Structure formats: structure tokens, C-alpha cells
Image (tube, rainbow, N blue to C red; front, side, top):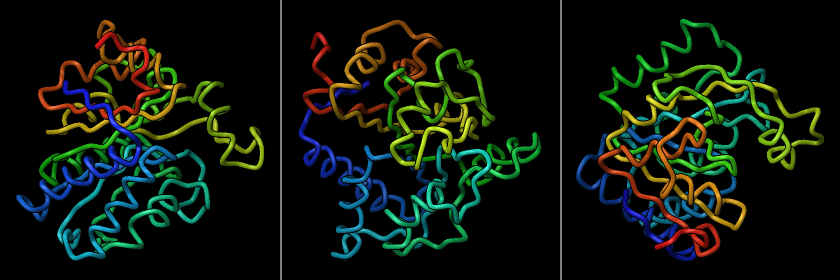
Length: 241
């Protein structure tokens, strides 16, 4: 696990440079994306690189981490809508190459089919991750088995409260989500996690310096052969580096 501490702006630039390097070497790379406020600066930087003619996504296949159960792709709080608005609509990505777990069809066949689609695409070359204050990655809450594949999870009260800022009220926040499992994430050839802010400091300490345990799902990154953790000073403030 490689730890890089920088400003949010510096993190976005460094992370975007990694995307450029991957796409220069493999224009048809399979990229895993994440949602939330954390990757917004990165996505803006990727859009800038595309507009400058330095990067292209025309042959890329994408897989997102998760989606709220019960939300149609057109819902303004769905993660498909988020990705379209903040990245996909601004680059040359083929919409047919986009994969996001369904929040409507969460049958066993549909969930297993997501992992199968990843396998058929050749596996994810790089998976982008955020981290929850409780150490969750994707929507894999503490206690999720480390061998889990794509599944439906009941969101904790804390996770729903954190995400309530995006909805009109807490009551509007879905109670469940479909998410890549921890094993699904770990199967990616490269992992890139971004953590910003003091609220992530405890989770980052547990991820980097704690034991590998389902109590902190992100701690499993310690076992990955190629994982990069980007933190700003606040998120890294409790590390003993």
C-alpha cells in the first residue's frame, strides 16, 4: 500500500495523471468509478484532460461501485445520474460501455450478472474508491464478509445520515444499496482510494495501520498488491507516518 499526502487539488492532478498513464498504455482499459463529493475534483481534472486532447475514453469500459436500491437511473440522486452529470456526459465515453449496478433489479441473477460482466470485460484495471467514516468501501458496511461479491446491503443509520445532505430529508434516503462486494473490489488490478477531511482520519488510520478486519472493510487494501491511498493532511492527521 502506497500512501500519498497532498492537497485536494494536488491529489486530483496526481490521480488524473495515473488515469492518463493507464489509458496511454491501454486505451481500452476497464475502469471502476465511484460517486460522492470526494472524486469531484478528479472528475473535473479528467474532463479538462479530455478537452485538452490529452486523454480519450472512447474505447473504455466502466463499472461503478454501487447504486441505491429503488432509484431509477434518471432519479437525480441515483448514481447513474451522478456519473452522467459529473463525468460521462463531458467525455467521449460510449454510453453502451457504462455499467452501474441496478437499483431496480436486485435479483440474485442480476447481482451475479454484474460480477460476470466484469469478468467478461477482462476484469477491472483500476478501481477508484472513497471511504466512509466507518471504513466502508462501496457500500460494504463494517461486518461485511471480506469474500463478498456484488450484493444488496442494508445501510447503517450513520451512512444514511451522512448522505442525507443530498436528499430533501433523511426519510428520503434509501435504506438499501446494491454494491460491489469486497472481493469484487479486490479483484481489480489496481486500487486508488481518496480520503479528504478530518472526518476520515480515524478510518484512514484503521485502514493503513490497523488489523485487516471486516470491522474496517477498507483495511483489506493492505492485502492488495497495488493499492494507492491519497489523503489530504486532515485525513492523514492520525497516521503515525
